[in-house]
Image (cartoon, rainbow, N blue to C red; front, top):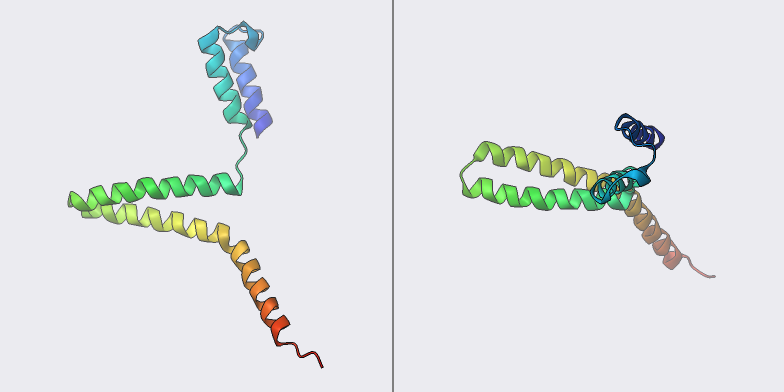
Amino acid sequence: MINRLHALLGKYLDKAGVADFTELDAEERATYDKWYETLQAEVTVDTLQTFIKSQLEQLGKGLQEAVKGGHDRQAILITARMENYTDLLAVIAAPDRNREQLADTIESLIKTINHE
């Protein structure tokens, strides 16, 4: 996917009559660099969790405003979105929780072993 996006960026420069990005002026170069950086960014579990948490924070504020304004339907929709994001966080955290539970179980087993 990234290769396709880089190819599109190159094609865009070609269509704009730019042979090389070094021909861009300062403002154009800043935009190009921003686009290139965005294309390079990888989605990781950490970035996904950060994104979801920021969305939950924004939705929480929106929910407060909807409730204060008496917008019940909007509050219901926001609550549903928050539940979806919360479920996604739970799915992401499940392997870590499972490892922690397994570690706790093994520690309990170690404590119960009789050394006869």
